[in-house]
Image 1: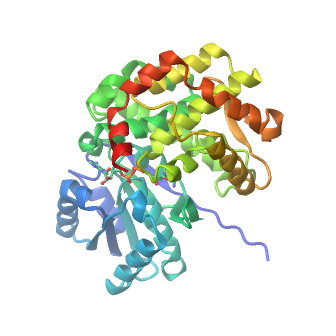
Image 2: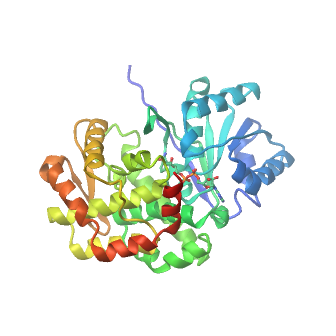
Length: 385
Ligand SMILES: NC(=O)c1ccc[n+]([C@@H]2O[C@H](COP(=O)([O-])OP(=O)(O)OC[C@H]3O[C@@H](n4cnc5c(N)ncnc54)[C@H](O)[C@@H]3O)[C@@H](O)[C@H]2O)c1
């Protein structure tokens, strides 16, 4: 048997797409049944209005409002969605729709991949992480056995509807968290995007990515373009486990687990990027000036660049788990300049001990005092956890 499974999907980016003018979405769904999955917050802000407009436009839509957070990003949540789909009578050509953040997109992707052995789904991401990353990729996952994203799938959406106006209501902390993924793609592939983000960081965060509007939309579109270009040649990760997009995703999952998800995804990614930069300068791959500029962008975005839980045990665990996950090689992406990545295939090239030895130095006094100031909510949530 020679079986090829090719997929194509469109990503539409426009303000109002999911709020004022869902006609495009309703045309896409056509005469199929739709199960709209969302969270209580997003339902209150946008979901209810969208649901009513879709009904007016003649779409046969059922809404499922569920608590979808990192703590219940689980298989039982997925099973629940599938049960609701069955009760609503969805068939194999009917459509799931994820209206929410990265967790909602991840969970709906897994549910769509399982229900009747796979049904179509669309995403309408409502957080910055969702719009530039989780909602436009093809991976879905749930947490299991105490591990983040332990179970998952590669199940591409049928279409993605990105409406940047939804970001206006997003909390500053989640805007910052999403900005870490934006910074990541800029560091990987685009010095101009990096400088744009650097220049407008404060206004973007203050305005919920609506000012300067043209610049904000261009940043979001560019990030999506770059992510898709990075994903396309190795979408199903069957060509290589050397992936630039894994920048910031080696130590961060362990940090998220260790903090019981008090640390947001983007915050953990920022800390991981900062450590990767320090490894890069230690290896002589990254110019210290570029490293400082990257750390400075992260701080400008109000992101943490270090964490008390980032200790030797965590680093060793991350190296072990990642090496197994990436089929025997660590494949740690390291910035080699702003806009390019080199892959450190094995920890042996620098030595786990040396990586651990870098850790205390990730807290020079000047940065430590800055860390105490930003971001305040982070320290608060840690105290509560
Ligand atoms: N599959 C992938 O390729 C991929 C890529 C990146 C991240 N992720 C995953 O995404 C998740 C993080 O996503 P996230 O940061 O969006 O978190 P999230 O989905 O938990 O959403 C964050 C919070 O924002 C609220 N919210 C959502 N939209 C809002 C809006 N428009 N206004 C106000 N509040 C709103 C939600 O109710 C929630 O409380 C992680 O689980 C991560 O692993 C997946």
